[in-house]
Image (cartoon, rainbow, N blue to C red; front, side, top):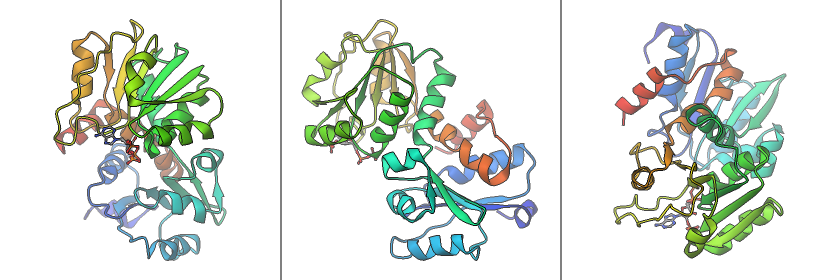
Length: 282
Ligand code: ATR
């Protein structure tokens, strides 16, 4: 804020309700400075009641924004109200990135690409497996299932406390995605090359459950989408048991790349300086 370059160039937003905890302004602000680009990116809180009017103001140009990010609870409504949601959004029923192009509001969902780009960067070769296990069956899990399936992984197993939710989710993705209750975790892990946690297991003040990761393939990777703390209780256990781990911060950083490129015209890089900036803010 108060930076003179904000008065020139494209303006982009992140909207949610609430939105003040979003780290997206830090990420995009860093890239605008690093690339010496004119433009701004700022948090813009909009309530669910006001969201349709906000989208209308985006479409008619009166908002002054060229696009932006959408977070909880607006992702589903953003998808529904966009003129041109892409195939990824269509399958997920949710969009997190919007941009105006030729007078139409386009939408995509970058969460899944953020997930795979983080693994590609931190552990290249992670996708040389035919079995992936995902814990959790919420919105984040859905985007990750899509991204992992799109990489051509043979079998994806979703394990969830509420097994009905996992079944409903798996059913959307066809025969390569299977649902299981949490109690089946140990059995389902056998031979898997990647284990992903999308739940808040062990993060809500309760003691983290002890997990025996030994059924995983010897060279398996364990990753968590929670990034505060960077090394979650689950990652700590996995590392102690000799497995490679990848923290979730990179997913947040990489999911921001496609939007920045759409709004400001240059592809930014996820570098150590950016990681350090976000870690310093935790
Ligand atoms: P998100 O959009 O971030 O994925 P969500 O839709 O609220 O969030 O989903 C949270 C996931 O964490 C769910 O899979 C939830 O399990 P249920 O479907 O059974 O509710 C899981 N989860 C949250 N707290 C949990 C806990 N203490 N133990 C096990 N699973 C938990």
